[in-house]
Structures are given as structure tokens and as C-alpha cells.
Image 1 (cartoon, helix red, strand yellow):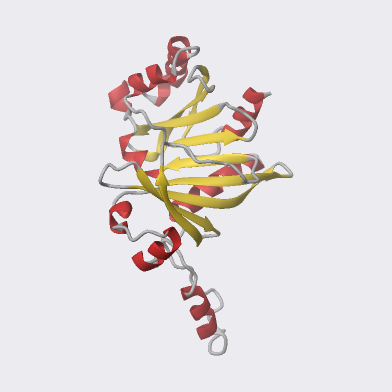
Image 2 (image 1 turned 30 degrees about the vertical axis):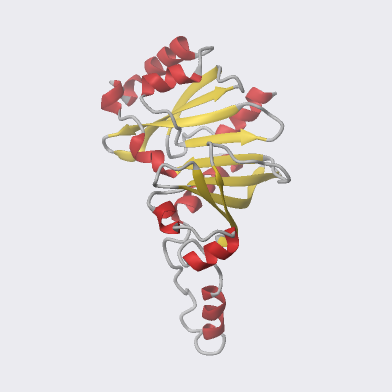
Length: 254
């Protein structure tokens, strides 16, 4: 697995588990002086787990019913920098849409898991990159996992992947993206990849295996600003055979 892919997989894994599990103290022999100070410092750091409505009101400048924004998982956007063929995370935005079907969303800006800022603003599916120094962007639409099509819904089996991929390429390349979405039965991808100074995007939809998500298959779609599909390819959703989407996107943009 190349370094770009290793980093991308790491980012997805960290985004999924960040803040969910405490880290054990591996140096059990160090006790007493400094332990309480460290714990106090850590408890003073704002995170998605401990931030309060009062703190959100102070950051956003609005006294809102913030609990309605946390009723479903966020869309997470990660900005990345390329360094020596590897990708370095620069910061994250967790975007929570209002459960009341309002277009207003709660944007929470994080660095290494710590909340730096928050705001209330409209969310239409993409974020502004104005003033951000980055090379790549990675969107994770967390709430879309359970809405991805199943193998049975598409009459798909891994043994027939090549034939299925050829059908998708023949039927949908050079067509509008919404036509493929109609076929898959889902209109928001699980992941989206973008690179700076390019209007091309790569969206990933998952065909969910009855065995579980780790045995599933990705349908990856590269398309332009008009929504016209340029290419489609399939790969394993997880594991060493997964193809690096950023490499494919850079190749398409050349």
C-alpha cells in the first residue's frame, strides 16, 4: 500500500473514532506529580464530547437549540497538505445539519480533535476554501453509511465485479451523474475527494456486503463541474487492494 493510501486510510479511521475511546496510560509506574496537572489540562480542552450549549452560543454568537444539531452524525471535512508524497491533516470541520430540516448547519472547526471555533451558517453540500492553505480535501458523509445500496438491491456479487464494472462504464460514462445515482438508488456519496486548482471531484459510493462493511465494494466516480461522468472504477472498500482515490484524481486532472 503506498504512502498516500496509508495516510488516507489513517485519516478515515481517525475521523471515525476520534474522541470515542480514552487512551490508556501505558506508563503505569508514573504516578503522583504531574498526573493531576495533565488531567486538568486535558479537561480544559474543548472537544465535541465536552462542549456545552453555553460555549457554542459564545462561539457562534447565537443562543440556539444546539441539541437538534447533534441528533445525527456530521459531515466531516478534512483539509490536507502533500508532503513528500504523503498527506498531512491540517484541520477538520464537523458539520451538523439541523434535524428540523432547516438548511442552517452548525460548523465546528477542529485541530487535532480540539474545538477551535464554531458558527451557524447554511450548508449546501460543500464548504468554502477561501483563505485555506491546502492541497486536498476529504469529505466523509457519515450519516450516509446506512443509506448505501446493498449487493442484493443491485444484484451484484464480488465474483462478477469485472462484468459489473464494465456495465457501469458502458452505461454511465459521459452521462450525467444523477443517472448513475438513480441506478444506485442513493444521491449523496459516502466520501468525496477534491484537489486544489481542479474542478474535478471523485465521489465514492459503497455496495454493502451482507458479510459487513469491511467486505463491501466501492463504486468510484470522477466527474467535472457540469456533473458529467469522466470515469468509473470499482475496488475493495477496505484492505490493501483499495485504490488510492487521490492518485486517481490527480491523474484525471493532468
